[in-house]
Structure formats: structure tokens, C-alpha cells
Image (tube, rainbow, N blue to C red; front, side):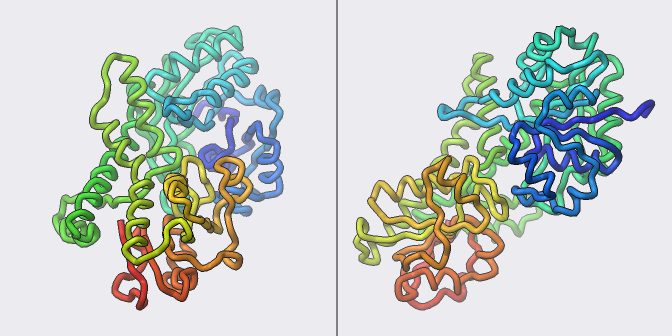
Amino acid sequence: MTRRRKISVIGLGYVGLPVAIAFGKLGRVIGFDINERRIAELRAHHDGTREVSGDALKAADIMLTSNPNDLKEADFHVVAVPTPINAAKQPDLGALLGASRLLGSRLKRGDIVVYESTVYPSATEDDCLPVLERESGLQGGKDFFIGYSPERINPGDREHNFTSIKKVVSAAGDGILDIVAEVYGSVVTAGVHRAPSIKVAEAAKVIENTQRDLNIALMNELAIIFKKMDIDTGDVLAAASSKWNFLPFRPGLVGGHCIGVDPYYLTHKASIMGYIPQVILAGRSINDGMGKFVASEVVKAMICEGSLINRSVVSILGFTFKENVTDTRNTRVIDIIKELQEYQIQIQIHDPMADGEEAKQEYGVILSPEASMQQAEAVILAVAHRVYVERGWNLVQSLLKGGRGIVFDVNRILDRTSVPEGIRLVRL
């Protein structure tokens, strides 16, 4: 590298923070977030997402700030802000364009801006670049330059992290890709892949998760079919997996801000281009409907056991979008809750990882401590948190009235060879 770039990271969530920490091991990094409470907790060496340890925060040289003027000190800016969908399942670029406005007014000649947020192909150049140019009064490709390097962070995964996953990089402008590749290559030990254009890199990101979404949708549809045939899906998958090239996907709830969101970015752009996707949207429809399916199966099982539905209590274990994370954004457990509420069932939700205030504010859901939960007719083990896996049947049985009732094990973490007497186990 001819000279060390001065790096800023905009957005210190589950994506941006590991990026800042990795670069912060090499030298001073500006870590910016508009959330002053987030900055305060990071300054206290605490990460509320539990993705980064206090020791890692202490070891990294990061100037943590919520003052956007501090960004002027950097010349290589990494933008890692959320790109969710709205209620109509359309892309919401509000945070991304907001970050672009904030950064644009502080850009200097020679600066490089690399976006990591998931977008549809062309968004970096068609949506973000004009904002940077308007706010800065500078010309992209001449006065400053842009790139795109899609995030590949997997929350809760301690094995695959920012530095150990190959990084796709792209850029516009002569020689800029070399700089972007060199900057990321200085910290990403797995190496970098140079995409020929920004659009290619954007498209690669959305299809990574679209492919996973469709594979899980197939498993979910098979689970629905096999349920009607009274065949255990787990047994079928175990048998099929004995073939060397069978892909080991499993049915389940598909939420979060990646697999459950990214396909909508691709289908949105495709629709603008005049093509209405068929397969991708069909997969999304199946996965979005699995919460309702789980709830309906629980109600059916309770009716078969003679429960008075509108006087029953159902306990749900887990509310985050996946196991061993604190994030509740786009959790599909809420679909189970809403469907059960249609039956006037009393619902209790427990999750030791989730933020109770966030759950209440975002979803109107009250999380209950285990000690205060009344015994229920049914328990839904919705999220496979480590603590639930470790406690297994002892935990589940303690939550049922008299230790008897319905248990729906969404992720098949309970040993079905040791089901306690009086419990009816249902699995996805």
C-alpha cells in the first residue's frame, strides 16, 4: 500500500463494529454511529449485541464518535448501515441515503466511499452516488470514488467472521479497485475476490441469501407435505443426506435482516425492469407463512388433547430472529404469536437473549422471566438458544401443567427418544 488510508466506519452495528475492530488493530479508526447510547456503551467496552468482547473493544484503536464532523479526518469511508424492508416488503433505503447525505457534506477530494449495506444491483451508483455528489459539490469518479464490498457477517457465528470470510470487493475509477482490495486485504486473512463491477458485487450479495432462502423454502414446503403424510421430516432428511451431494438444509422460521429481507431487494429491482419473479416470490411466500403453520399445528394438537383453546396458555421459548443472538429485527416468532392471539390464547414469551424494552417497543410483546411464567397447556420451542438446548426436556416439562401437554419443537433440538410420559411432541 503506497500510503495507509485513514479509515472511518459509519454504522457500528453487527456489521460495522467487527469491521472497525479489525482495522483498529492496525491503527486509528473513526467509528461513527448516530446512536449516542450505542457510542456510550462501546466506550464502556460493552457490546449490547454480544458479537464483540470487551477485550476486543479495548484492544482496538477506535475513535468512537457520534459527531459527523469527525469523519473529515478519514479518506476511506466504510458505510455499514441497515437496509431493511418496509411494511409493504419494499426496500427501505432511508438509513443508507441518510448516511450518504451525512457523509457527502464532509467528503474531500481523493476520498473513497465503500458501501457494505445490502442493496439491489445499481443502488450504489444510481441512488447513493448522486446524494454524495449533491451534498459534497464534488464529482464522483473524478474528485472522489465509490466502491461496494458486501458484508458477509453471520451473527452468532464465532467461526466465520469478518477476517476469515473471503471479501468481495468492487469499485469504479481507474486504479480504485486496487486500493479497495489492498485496504481490505490488509485485514481479511481469507483474501479478496475482485468483482468486475459494482453491479456484479451487489448482485452477488443478494443472490447469496436468495439461494439460501429458496432452499429453506423447499424444506419448509416438504415439511408441510410430510406432515399431511404423517412422515417425520427429520427422518426423511437424514435418509436423503446419506447421498454425497444432497444439500443439508433444514426447515424453520426465516427472519432477520438477511435471508428474510435480501430477496425482496432483488425482486423489487426485477419488477422495475419489467420482470415479475416467480420462483423467488413463491419461496418468500412459503417462508413468510411458516409462523402461521406452526401456530395452527399447535392448536390442532391441543384440540386433539381436549384443551379449551380460548382458556389455554401457550408458552413460547425464544423471540430473537435466530439462536444465540440478541437481535429481534424481523423475527418471525411474531407470526406465531399473532396467529395464536386470533384464538384468544394467553401467550407467554421467554427469551434470555432478547432486549425486553426493544421487544415491547417494536412489537408490543412483553417478555416474561421464567420464574413468573404460569404452567401452560403447550410449549413452543421457537428459537434454539444454547441455554434451551442444554436444559432440554427438564426445562420444557417444568413449564407444562403437571408436566403434561403439547410441545412443538421448531428446530428439533429435543431428543425424541426420551419424551417424558404425558407429552405429545410435534416437530417441524
